[in-house]
Image 1 (cartoon, helix red, strand yellow):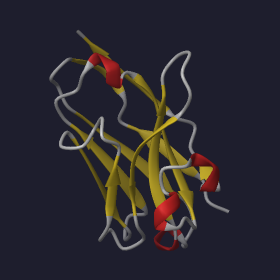
Image 2: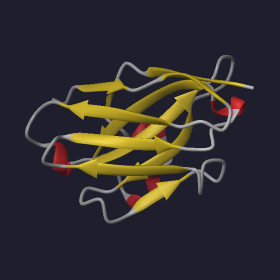
Image 3: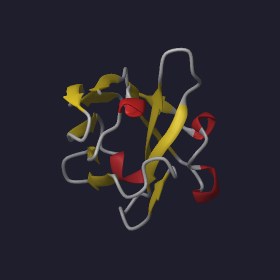
Image 4: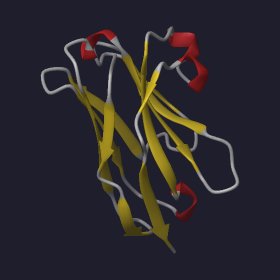
Length: 125
């Protein structure tokens, strides 16, 4: 069992930056692929980014590529999402997920087994 707790969300002006954190409980964090997804009001949850177990491979949605950076610290059981050049369309609740996910499935939420409660990110224009 893994429990995930996101933090770092907030209100920021367009062009600004935020860093989200997702802290995991347990001693098996390094076994899991970690992903970030987001859901805006009235929209379906969408993939943002993912990172493999070692941190050596990262994946991004086209909409955030070049602006967001995912990283993980297995010693601290934490995954991060550095978000720069934020746009109003990045406004959403951001969720982190953990799972034993194959590389070709990282963009699909149904392959993740554990989810956090989410953190709100609001970008003003």
